[in-house]
Length: 257
Image (cartoon, rainbow, N blue to C red; front, side, top):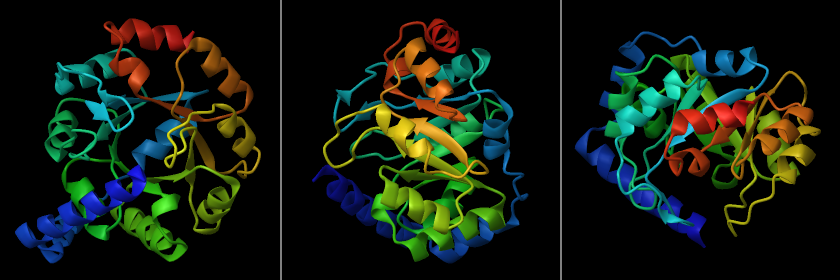
């Protein structure tokens, strides 16, 4: 199963990173930085519907999406087109991501950034802070409830937001019980990679109103956005649709109409 492979490759990567720079050093550096102000979730709460625009070179299901990958230029285009936040893939093996993309983009835009990766260790949260992230993705299907609670607390200590990703009702309940303030429902099943927009519509009803709700994956048209607006989602995360668009500003404007 691809998710198992992603988790295993991430585990190997993080263990190597810990050997290169121990957790103690990364943690101390992150905690010495100015505490964040939870800017990511504040932005998601503001707009009628917020747009989290994703920067990714490839994916396991689609292969290479962007042969040309001027990630800083893309980030600036997103910001100029009115993106609320930017999601940056940092997973290197299957998504061709890199932490340097996150760090360099953070120096070139002012809107909040999500580190999109498979967080399985607290090391990755402290490291995300150092590299300029305002938010990290925490995926229920690869974390236990205690881990989720611990990682949300670490984010709170750093002033970072946690986008807690769920795919079904059981995971939504787990996210709520763990204290998530922002839940992202993935319309793509990470086990089969099939996509169903109705997943967000169905699970929105299971999330308390005080918790922010983000719909992820499979969002391609303005009609999809209108459909999700009716479902009362707070934000949408859009990746492949924007990455494949020759004119990303025009595409984002079309989605917003």
